[in-house]
Length: 430
Image (cartoon, rainbow, N blue to C red; front, side, top):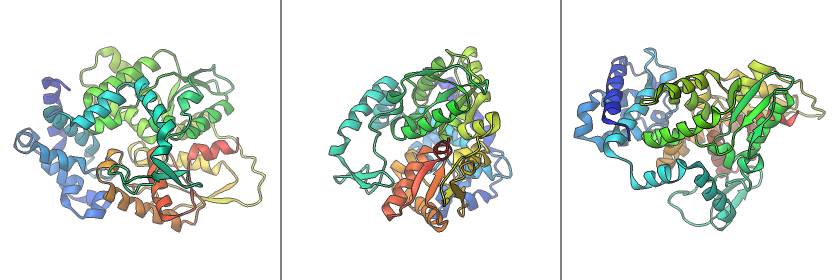
């Protein structure tokens, strides 16, 4: 839990940022949650109005404020389109930290975040056990998408079609790596992230294959932890801080030119949230965070801008139609949109067909999907309709969380459309 001094500093920073909002309401037009519910309380302007004077409101109705703030995808659509430049995501993250610092975490969140997520080695062991016995509880439903559903009525899984845990996670396939720079003359550290490690290890393999092809040295330290965004989104700054410090220690042990990830959320977290929430860090830790912030890149951005793409050698007769979904954290938070499309176009076996509303949120939102699945799925179905209308055989994206949500929507609808990461498409032809 942050100290009283840290909480007071957060409240002051939050109040200073709130005065920038003009209450113009332009955020309504781009908010995926408001598009589904039509509720003013669900749009950024409504939440910002609620937070105005939080220091007083926190004592009057803290639970009510917390519940309202939880109804947000943290997609950043409002911030990306705000004419006043209000840093909405920063405000909401700080407000959640303040409220959790005041109210404390629920027993379930405390068990998940502090009992599991904050202990990477233990977390890996538990999920390794889970992957062995998951067949008792889940059954496959779509061989093309690789999706499964629950064998039993489950309040958590509900009617979801989800990707099961990989039989062998990335950290077991490649426990560690430390190779010297090759033809590219560059060395990168690879931050895998939880979903790629445990559900989509093929994405991690595609990253490593692409880097090796271009002669890029790779530092992949063992025992990597979560980037911390699930805990931070819930306001658990203690777990967030523990994970940040764990990863800082790992990645400070070897020199490298860039830190690359294939997860839009991990990239945005390291680049924006780690510096934002380094409230009580020492000078050395802050310097380490600033150094990483300046060097963290999405894998598509690194390949396009730092090494250049390889020419394709496709020998097939017909091209497959492929469309692309822009992850919110990649395009809206980091401005990365052309680079993953360049990876796709580099494969001559595919023809890129843009879908309508390519950058409209898929509706996942991490924990939002767990807490508000019906709304999340409604937003996801809008994305699914645009994918289907594109008449593509494959939909690519740059975020494993988006891959989960899109797989769920396509699988439930019975659509025979593959879901891939853009780097998987690129690596296919190498």
